[in-house]
Image 1 (cartoon, rainbow, N blue to C red):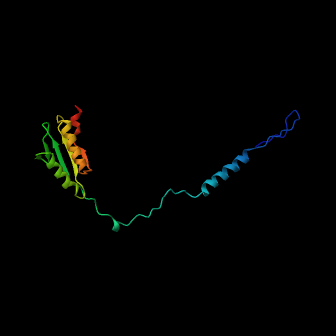
Image 2: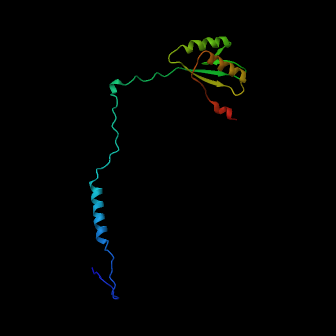
Image 3: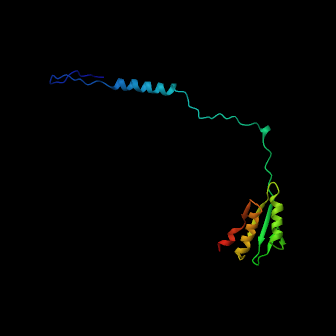
Length: 140
């Protein structure tokens, strides 16, 4: 490695050689990276023991209510004579624990009035799990 102290015209050169400074900085950086402890991203949790596991949930009973185009209401396949009998069924079923699920299957030609009365009757008797099944046929 050569070093020039001055130029041919007689002026002095005042530049500092930064190569050794950069070498020392790189060595310090590598030593710093090596000595840093490895970061762990684990979270310690105190999980309950399997002996205290809750019992599996009980599957609720499913009641299918079909409403035909002529206004006939079917409770699990058997015809219901009138709305008062349907209200009695709802009162008995709402007292059960867990409360059964109601799966409504109205015909797409059924009158809205009949479907609304059945839903209102279920709501009056505190039935909470009500759903419509097979509604894809109404997309026509």
